[in-house]
Length: 234
Image 1 (cartoon, helix red, strand yellow):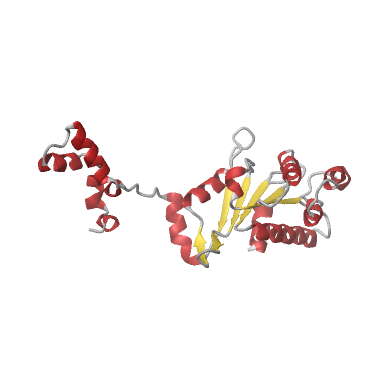
Image 2 (cartoon, one colour; image 1 turned 180 degrees about the vertical axis):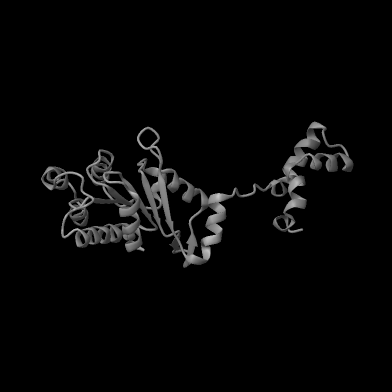
């Protein structure tokens, strides 16, 4: 998906506006940054299109970087972050991105929670990751995807933000519903009903079977039973 990511970044990120690219793993963060650097070099005859300052001005920062691949990508305005970086490398990349020296920052998906960088454009480069414990490919949790999308927001700087999500074609309807329609909220009371009943019995709210039935009719679960019976195994 790197070519699609490069195209989306060039098309949707205005000149000088920052872009964040999220990838599933730390290994892909490095590979994606190298590919973006390569595409920009090929398309612009060696000109670092994502570098917003002169390369000579960047040298003092690059010299302090420990990661050799990162040194090369930064010269073309592309940085990347993952959990394995030293504190110094992370701080330099964050500073260069926040101050507008580099335009693109590639990050592993887990860093969407710990790194408070925002941009005018966010590209989610695939919505699945490999679960080593189960040896399967799993989709991002909805909360993670929402968090990534939320980084396409700079309220005091930009009038709008953009998010491009690249995903497997059969998942199209799911993500369209996810983005444009609210997911229904379901009750989990059935898992903790015995605790609630015991509490209400002790305080005297429930004294007989009819009281228990009346108590349930006021619960949110009671409303959802008829509206989504499959969820509750009815």
